[in-house]
Image (cartoon, rainbow, N blue to C red; front, side):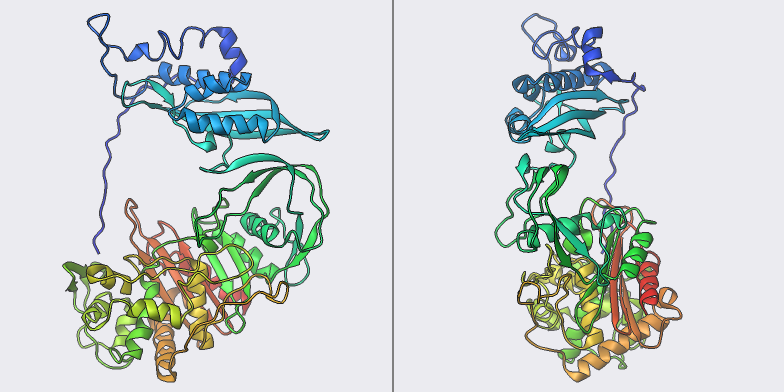
Length: 557
């Protein structure tokens, strides 16, 4: 599939003066007093009229004065408690009114002081200091946020571009800030050896710990405290709700205890390795049981490893290969076509650098990640074949995993024509995350699907998902063979060097619109360990995610 690039023009503007100091100082100094949201200030700068009753809409980049004035108007009104005026300074006054009203009424935040930082174009950072008070308990609150000034299309007036994150960076659409009895008691999460799991030791576990509290707080024996927290919006039907997040504890509750399957040594190693990349995620499993031994993300605000929804690229070929083996459309050691290009459904599919393998086996095509070796078989498949294989053999895409915290179970929708063909190589509508792809490798190693889990099902007597069928002995043997060959001689060989012979791997890269580089994927097993990782905008999986996954397999052996 060819890359599509978008090129955006960038206009250079003169470096503006810094907007700094307390907002109260800005007002006292007259910077805001010289302008008016409704009078002759920022709006007036957009006038180019030749007559008194005619106004032309101003377009183009915002001036330093427009950004400075608009930011000052919003922050001053917010600081003074004038919700109506602050909301009117945004491009969505209704939504802003709701969040700003809740800031005082539901979150019980008072004494707000806002200090602006150095402006960068239309973006103005600022710090917030305030006090949270509830039932006689008070604590100071401090955090950093930012706003962006935009020009309203209909009249050119500069306004604050409204996002809930302007008020607090952890707020998303539909979320609320609430101070009160926590409702859900805190929990102390323990690793498999009984050690406490904290974000101080394991920085990327924040979302996992939030999820454990959401799931087990009321049953783990703890007592609720008083907190300021982000109450997340309700999830769509069939989706798992993102856990609420505690921002400030006014009085501590008594925590309950939750035991997890995480390995302290592997978790620490995973944290360290993903931290070297801007956007990397990894999961390590035990194939024989499904126990999750490590989960780490270099970006801590969202758990991509468990909840990400990304095209998995050629790592999906593990599932597709099992389908072709089942249907007798490929055999590991028999000749299989790998032309430079293949056309299906009106799309022309390419191999990397348009390579071809003449008179090669399917094993050679799999090891080199030949796209056309799979596309040439599309015409012999039904539209729902890949979907059924993913669901029935690998336990994916049925939204029924119960790992102990929120997770996305993968998606392989039924598609047709070119999109169906693209799905065979992990593009089209296929969506996965490292948890899903680690489970795929684990299923190959173990010979059957074991639903991954972070908390033992014996804790709450929940039922784990199962697969409705297993691969035939012939399919399983061939799938292990092609993955072992890839780890030894194919695109995964460099990363997996020295880890054989009981191992297997598959690399992948997935193109994403708007990205210069594809996402790099890698899934593998060694002994009774399986792992998968993704480095977003990393390039080839063997070079980016591969070293992370291989190092963790080696460390856990």
